[in-house]
Amino acid sequence: MKLLVTIVLALCSTTQAVDFKAIVHAGKKFTVCRVDLRKEKLQLFLKDDQDQPLRSFATLDAWLQKKGEKLTLAMNAGMYHGDFSPVGLCVADRKQLAPVNLANGEGNFFLKPNGIFLISDQGAKVIKSEEYPTLKEKVELATQSGPLLLRNGVEHPAFNPESKNQLFRNGVGVASPHEVIFAISEEIVSFHELATLFRDVLKCPDALFLDGTVSSLYAPPLKRSDKKMDLGPMIGVTTKP
Image: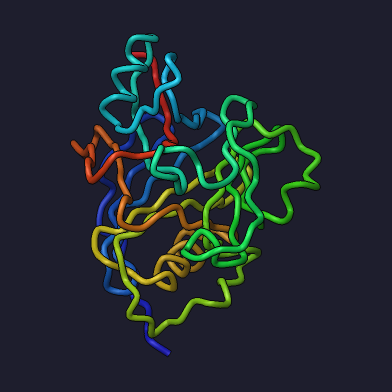
């Protein structure tokens, strides 16, 4: 078994209840963003007022500023089709924009079990997609992706610690009902490395993979606004300027 070495490098910045840190885990660099839901509200964004896909952090921030808000954190939030519509479940402001997808197929999204990150009247959680139809809570926000990195501390059975399948990747984990943690790799990583980051370092028993090559972060305190390619669903925190 490889020795996993984790070093917290520095506290980069704190913006109200959003905390940014640079972390090295298993010899790989990550940027980690913690959100305290007791002080901040996460929102899911997909389209503007004309029902057009927002596609980028810059467009999203400009759209929000017209509404008297400012984007303080954002990340890509799940896989999407060529027209930027979500592949799976998408709920924003308690409105379902796309249904849960329990189909079988090819690609990371369909590497079962896949999962759903959601915020309900009971707080944040990550669940298996199959659990969603029986959920009794009032869901405020939800996004589906795959594969599921962790459920109850158990790593996805398909992950291989020796895997050569490595890409830039990002995901979301839940440390408690009020603490949500986003992580994005700054170099190529395996699913196993991302999963163990959430479980062993960030202490999240449940975590979900968001995407690979498109992995993007918007973080003004880090002077960062990634523009790799156009995005579908985006998740973020806003403040009043």
